[in-house]
Image: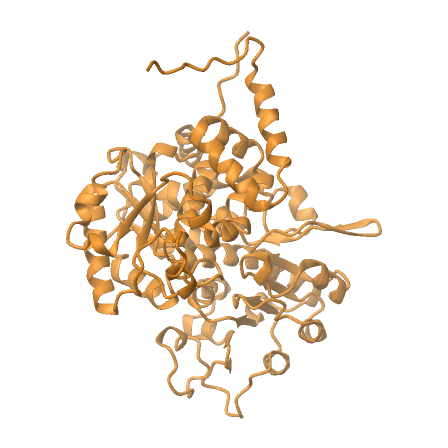
Amino acid sequence: MTAQVSVPPPAFSQATHRSRCLAQLRSKHNGLEKYIYLNGLKDRDPSLFYTLLHDNMKEMVPILYTPTVGDACTNYSHIWRRPEGMYVSIGDKGRIREVLATWPNVREARIAVVTDGSRILGLGDLGANGLPIAVGKLDLYIAGAGIRPSSSVPICLDLGTATEKYLNDPLYIGVRRPRPSPEEMDEFMDEFMGAMKEVFPNLLVQFEDFSTDNAFKYLDRFREKYRCFNDDIQGTGAVVLSGFLNAAHLASEASGRPLSEHRILFFGAGSAGIGVAKQLLSFFKFQGLSEAEATKQIWTVDSKGLITADRPGLQEHKKFFARTDYQGPPLTNLQDIINYVKPTALLGLSTLRNAFTKEVVDAMVAHNPRPIIFPLSNPVSLSEVDYEDAINWTDGKVIFASGSPYKPISRGERTFEPGQGNNMYIFPGIGLGALLSKAHRVTDSMVEQASVALAGSLDHEERAAGLVYPRLDRIREISAKIALDVVRAAQNASVDGAPALRHVTDNTLLTYIKEQMWDPRPPKSLL
């Protein structure tokens, strides 16, 4: 049988076809249908897919990543159509190197996003259904930093799941077994990371959505040995630090309070919460405080209330910010905790929908002319407070940033524009800078400088509008500037491997960075 060759119609135009594809996308009735459509388009015509993403970032990012990617993950075994990315199974233990070596673009591979599906967004243990998280993050690397699609490696570690409904789902795509013991998991991860280094010697590994304890454990275990970072801990922390730098200035302008006297209350003390809290120590260090002094400006709250050092059975990762200066009965009510701490900023990483009630927000307003309220849990369905409520309850005084996108709100002649603490602002630039500098590890200073670069990237109009984050349609410009500062931080830490970049000017380096960014758009005609 002879294969048929498809030929486009004589009047075919790429520009018209781009418009046609956008119209088809917009005709879908919900986010999941749009996700499935874009996934199919990427398979059929990757260049067209990435061109549309490049040119329609604000519209398409919420489909390919949060919030819609949460729906894609929970339904992945049912919407799966073709292989995308790589699964490495617990059954591959002992032969992981052989499995990795089957990847078709081994020599081109530069960035891998690796998840084990154990804590996807705020949705829990999704097992093998977590692969779209890795795929989505790499799409954002490609769109936001110009990483070539052929150099990206999405990986899901299929290690079982503790979620019964997936184990009982006849269409479940993963292995049907409980998760491994800590000892078996450690052995697997040691073999996996060693094999990754052997098979992909030029690879940067981004860990994504591991369970809280494992997220901290494997970052600490591997960060000095391999080129890796954890986006939930370091990326989230960096993007929140950036937004907080701008928010704190706005709040201090309204209150007259010195920047060093801000008081931050974290509601949620998992890997993201504690990771963000540790990153925000840098804010106080920038003001001249020691680490010990900075730690005293941060309070943390979990499901049991204010975290104090005398609590029996306190998890290891919560001990760092546990308070030693509170002697009263346990504080369990968030409103009472706010009235005790009198924070200038309330940050939510709890995945508890509507946890910031009107009474909670009123308590923040009582202590601050312009309260900083960042409900950072993803997706929107798990946000601690909706933007419209925050605006209404504070009469527009709130300085707001969320983890997932919200639409602007108009009140009379005034329009309020929400900030979004989207990790997409940070991780593409960190990845690009780490790759171009050929850094052999990702240091805390590289992550910190990425945050500072993002904070300083607001243009005049964005500052005049009181924004805490730049607009997403400038992401490539922002990623290039972040990459520049990441390269310089790698050089200052002596972890870089590209000596030719050490002595060029910043302008020359920025031009070089932009020249390395892949552009999916077809070249413009010279006619």
